[in-house]
Image (tube, rainbow, N blue to C red; front, side, top):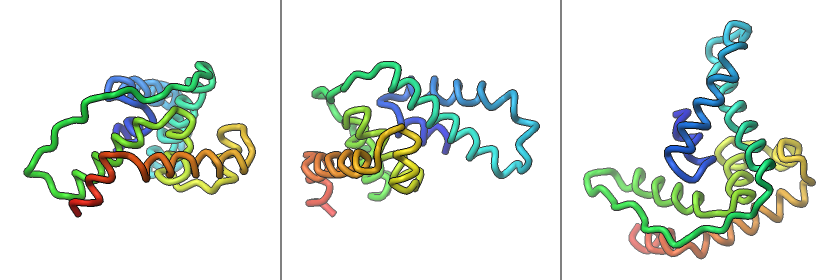
Length: 150
């Protein structure tokens, strides 16, 4: 589960593994101070998001998606898994700012105000960034094909 969240924050599996490892290292020193064992996953998730935001701020570059060959489908998976993969790849093609904002807003289920606070931007910026990202997802060719086949 944690690796899947890391994958949604990054663009590839190797970066996701690095992000998860960095978050686990950061949380290792506070592990015993976390009062509830059930809260540890949330603590690691928050460390991953904060680490990725820091990396994104460090780069301060708008990265635009390139023409990538989509992964091949495995026919024996359920259609929900296929859809989740297609959506995940589509989100991965978004520019960093849009991808991180969408992940925080919808995957982490934060309010617009909470996302704005985490990213250090205004609520209006969060709204417009999410709107542009959803617009790009609406016009994504892979998602259009998936909508047509379901």
